Length: 242
Image (tube, rainbow, N blue to C red; front, side):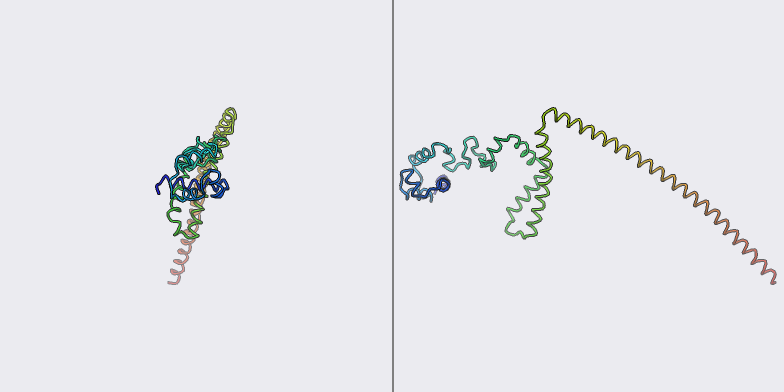
């Protein structure tokens, strides 16, 4: 069975089951035998051009020929190969068509610095899923969730920005600059206050040291006088005993 025949066999069965038809019903609609449908779905025969033409006409040309042949998973012609290249289904492509601004969000997510760890975690999980225990699964889920939280937060900011008019965006930028200037001023005042406090406490410390040193001088002087007096009395008594 060739690769093209194998692709077509898989697609034919998918189309029939999606349409809700049995092999017998499908065969009747396409004016072939049930056995022919069975052979085609198993890939045991390669369909002829007449059958392919009948299949294409039956769906009133609403399914692209490449989709019928299994060359693409996108039904819409304008979405051709989007699934093969990017994994985007027709539903995802339709959503992007209806809401083009989502492209900005997707770009922000994919280019975000925290997206690459998610990709690495995904690759590791795919490669090692058989050997991972519940704790490892939980840790991987935690890492991915933590990264997604950061990405979603930043993406919401982008979405909010996209929803603003040019005038609103200019006003927001002005408010941001004003807030930034106030923050810089508060930071400057805080640094100045910190420097003033440092000088203030340095002066207090110096005063306390000087006071302690002065008290020590008085105390040491008093102790010296007492010692000297005691020495004088002791010397006098010893002399008297002699």
